Length: 600
Image 1 (spheres, rainbow, N blue to C red):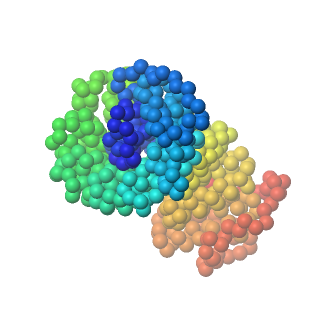
Image 2: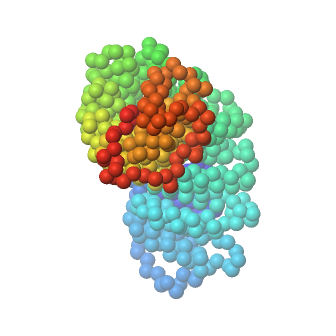
Image 3: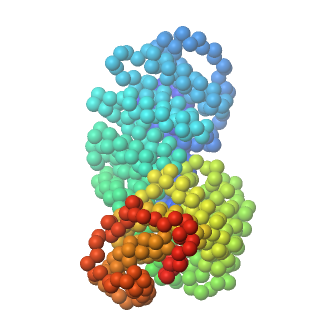
């Protein structure tokens, strides 16, 4: 978590490996998985430094101390006001010694109970809030996130913000820890809401331009990027840049980090020129501060932008610069080297040099097959996903599927990776569909949909696209009513997120019209096709080859229904009537199949 300020704790308390208050008055969160990859089935945008941290039980904080002796405590003694601080110190000592989080949890729970018993009536106890933060952090270290949530929800109710800075910032600490925990559960919408509450409290306590506010803004911006909410992320990142320009010297490391995040956002939105400008400025700042490895990472990002702009020679130069630095500083078999190999493989495929592209893929796979110590499963999975996309371009879907399965197995036990796994399952569904394995395709899409619903991404454009793909699989399995429901939900989401004129939205309209025709709702199918044609005639133009196809389809349906085209159609929002009469399964099977096809 970013620069969290909380209530004071004993100065002699040793540092912890998990998120608990320390003697400096801050809450530390050790880095586990900085950021889950976007579920979008594409390569991730340019690298950006992540300040987002998760509770982790895996890292040690220095030399282990001898474990404290086991203390037997009478429950009746919890009324002693000196016992709470003593138990909390025991919890810290137990964690620092590596003697086991379960024993530390017992001490922390007893400390919380003691603070609660000793609290003065009507007076909120910041010691209680602190002990609850520690309890929740230990639950997280035990991967018991569901149990940490109610503890943190209770902790944020203890401080009274109006009582002063200590209370306000204790509440801020609780909200940010709660957001981290929701993030580890994959519930991004709730995570973001918690971060927003924390930011609001911090700004009221410290002012809008405090450097600590900038850190929290960037933290929240990264959460929005993870949820693919790029407009919100951009606004927060701009505020962060403004604050750092005011408080930091020119070309500072803080500004460089902000610009890298802004470049990632601009790249995701397709604004490549702006992304390139931010990366070049970040690169200059890192060079000025002697951060060679960070310079190389930014060079990879610059290469990605050049590749997107089809400036291939400049992209190769950037990648090769980064490759030279990574090999000299990290070794030939480091995953950073493999990641550059993957980017070069993608570039050479796009320039028609297929042999070179395949060679770089194989070199990267050799590195991922024997990772050096310290390589995280997330790094390997990300690389395998990118290589699978290239094999898919090679028209080798079976090999691509194998790589995606490996990536999914690496991530399936990792907290906070639900959205990434959903993206993998969606890509697998597409490949199963292309191979004619429709039952497996539908199963993969269904798993992806369930995870995306649980993670709060049920309103994203990506979710709408996955629903459309699942609907197409249902059509192939003759589950027409199910397909209609999926297309209807996809239509609502894509209209909201992309607008009615977007190609994805138009594709869903066409699929929905075909489905309505198949289940006997011919009038609704006609109305949708008339709406599509009107959109093309009035806003998109008729040069698109789909226009003639859709016009022909509409003519066939009108002829069958004995009608002529109505150019003054009703609004599309009135077309999908859930109370409309549906044909039975028997009637559907006997009906002539739709005269027009479906669009993926």
